Length: 222
Image 1 (cartoon, rainbow, N blue to C red):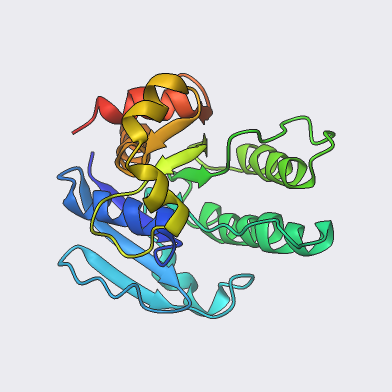
Image 2: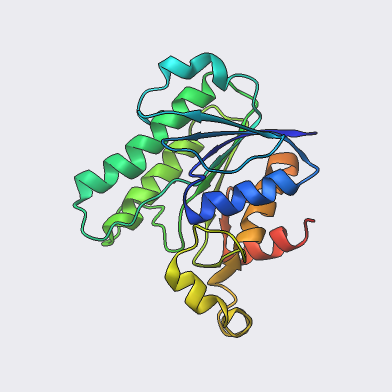
């Protein structure tokens, strides 16, 4: 099986890294990036659509057909945001894209980047965790072939890429130490990308991949 993926979030740290891994993978046939601005990446496998309204896809509906994977890497911090605002740019935005894709690609595997500590009960005290939990739950109820929710904590960036957060770069030097001391809370960006490719091809034992799952599964894939 060759992957034909749609990727969201290519101008962020996680999306840029997943795109880098996908374009290098022999298992990926093509990648369609949907973004508000160009990724500034050129590759024979890559096509881009510049799209302003991430809540409405009717204008590009015909271009979304024929894909069997989605790597959804869009995300924003909840810092300084009230729940209504955070919900709109997290839950509403993600579900709008998922609805547009599920109705056109029933054989698609949807990979969603969530976060460590996400609250599947939707009743916890942390606002961001409740919103992420509802997003995960409602995605899993949609008519995709499969949905996998990735819950990374600290992510070691890929050397040489431009979108990594300053803190990730600063802490990345100590990754071997963090990995030994806190194996349940760290993974690499390469492992996230490889794990997304792997679950799109062969699935996984659980719809939720915690850090340890991402690290072990992603490191087993070349």
